[in-house]
Length: 406
Image 1 (cartoon, rainbow, N blue to C red):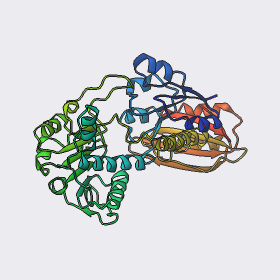
Image 2 (cartoon, helix red, strand yellow):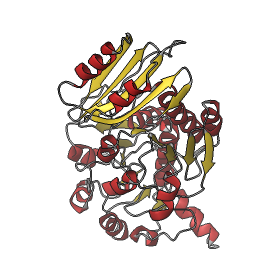
Image 3 (tube, rainbow, N blue to C red):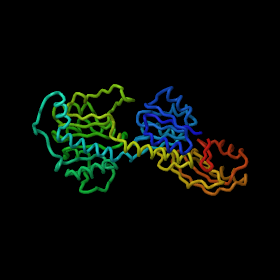
Image 4 (cartoon, helix red, strand yellow):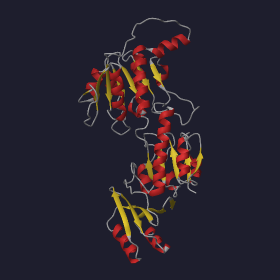
């Protein structure tokens, strides 16, 4: 039976999907590293992780039987995607299932910042009764600036407008505004105009350090900053300095440059000394609803890949999909280097053996190709051995109905 290893307390909804596809499921609550990770990978056909388990080239090299990795989260930067592609290991993620959860928390944090609710709560916990309305405002009529108008940013836009906020946004791509939101031509224009700025950008070399001391200096005095995107996007030392000297009125951060690997590990940040900062432990998408949706989505992608070789929505190798395999046919799933002549060689080997091809689908990127062939039953195993032994082959397996073998 194929084996699935699920780390980091992935929602239990994933288990039923994988078990139905024939997997045995092993679990571990936290992230694994080093020898412990490699030992676990050695007995696994697919791996499920969240954001803390790092899968690098050396780990993949030690796991030649690993067919696929499911990132049960939005990001995939914790996996060496190029190394996974070179090994023929497909990587899947869930880019949209936690959209609503992150958007709701972002808008809730904006309300809390404008009303200074966390500061009032901290005072009350310390025994101080402060009923003053000073520096406490409604969000209605305030300008929210959104950096990154993708699925989450646009959802924040809709929710914020429902509360009466005026929304402006900037994205590196031209995006259709929702509601009355208004685009701005640059990051700087949003920073200068908004009363509250919220970040919803991916982690890329271009977004690293996107908000530093010079960008904070462009913001309105007393404005708020929210980062529920990636920890590398904001210079937390510069932000802490701006909060201490009153340049900014407050901030909310759910992500940090350095985050503990598991629950209970110690967390440190220069923002811990800032009473006007709302700090949360990377829980923007951590609702029961979002985690269940993510578990179902990624597990279903892994199951489809196992059962019929579908790489639809795969992030590192070409996306190929064919319908459910018909009875009596064999499916050949072949990942190979993208060089001329590979298909010709495969077709020749099959033709010489008198095997008919009933369906074929190929997709390629500059380095890798993935082809699915549905063929008549093959009587001679040496034919498959010959295809597998082609020098361009990265990984090959076959499937028959709901069964798959390496």
